[in-house]
Amino acid sequence: MSDKQKAMLDDDRDHIWHPYSSTNSNVPVFAVRSAKGVHLTLEDGKQLIDGMSSWWCAIHGYNVPELNTAIEQQLDDMAHVMFGGLTHAPAIKLCNKLIEITPEKLETVFLADSGSVSVEIAMKMAIQYWQARKLPKKQKFISLKNGYHGDTLGAMSVCDPVTGMHTLFSEVLAKNYFAPSPKCKFGDSCQPQHIEELKEILSTHHKSIAALILEPVVQGAGGMKFYSPDYLKQAKALCEQYDVLLIADEIATGFGRSGKLFACEHAAISPDIMCIGKSLTGGYMTMAATLCTREVSDMISNNPPYAFMHGPTFMANPLACSVALESIHLLLASDWQQKVHNIEQQLNDGLAPCKAIDDVADVRVLGAIGVVELKQAVNMSKIQQAFVDAGVWIRPFGKLVYLMPPYIIETAEINILCDAVFCILNDGKHL
Ligand SMILES: *Cc1c(COP(=O)(O)O)cnc(C)c1O
Image (cartoon, rainbow, N blue to C red; front, side, top):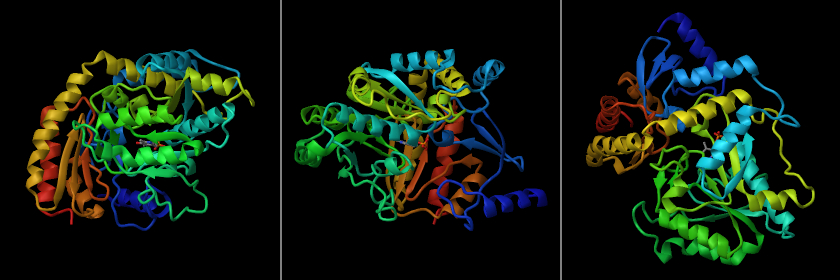
């Protein structure tokens, strides 16, 4: 590494926060110069195969000509205008498209700046809905252990209490209810004992619960767990029985990652409120959305204060809307289902040898997500460097080493990712 590059990285470490980082850690960060297709090119010229899609986002890979063009063309018209009192074609076209492709009962869209904010919006919608229905006591939420819904305070209050660090923020986080993480695996049916506790909390506390919020079928950052669509179906039925709204957080699962366009489709359910984000813009710009049913939007709109109380400055940014619309067109015009299915098979084959490694507790694959769960947490600085040395970009957390590559990845490249995971875990370079 040149002196100039080293000085750059020293500056980065001393002054810049990264996600869940410290300003004096010895976990390396790597400077990226450019990215194209499934490759990241580092400042020192090294090429890495991307196994992360930049945290679920870059489903088409990087530097995609069609997405570049969508932004460039929009830039000629306008980069941004306020959304209070104004509207524009990119927002209207995008929202129409979202209504068309998401579960059928979702009919209105609130555009937000990030996933966490879309979760805040969903929670505020649920609270305003019950206020409007003259049931103002329904203000609490129930969620699942191992769930992850974002890093803002409202979203944190429905994240897993342990991994979400509730003790650290106990004075400010709202107290909500938590049901166990579903024990029934994807492909198995949901037995009464699997959903008993959720049912019990709902039956005891439903008068104070506004909504159940969960990640359908795939629990992401809170544990990378896959559970039975049958659980989701039964949870939806319980929500109806106890008059509690269902918020589906599809921020990670949306746009094909689990093998269906939206994970709710595995259970053929339509939630009352749904959050999407991450791959919405194909990884180009930050944008998320909260969709809800006509029942929810009408109830809020027809009762005091006759408005939904939220309005971000950069709501419906035209550049983000344009690139999101193009990303959805690209996805739907491709044979994404076949691609995700192929990735699923290749991950299954490629990660299977990891099962024989002593430190490995579990290997699981669903759609374009492959997870190797270890018996103990990895040493981040060692394993991160080892992956980069092996020419792959894989970012583990805790006990989890996982792959969720862009859908455009080729078989040979998936094999390189899987081999790197196997070799590095087998060599004990993660300890
Ligand atoms: C990433 C994520 C969020 C938060 O989205 P941000 O854009 O990081 O704020 C919320 N819910 C789920 C399921 C996520 O995966």
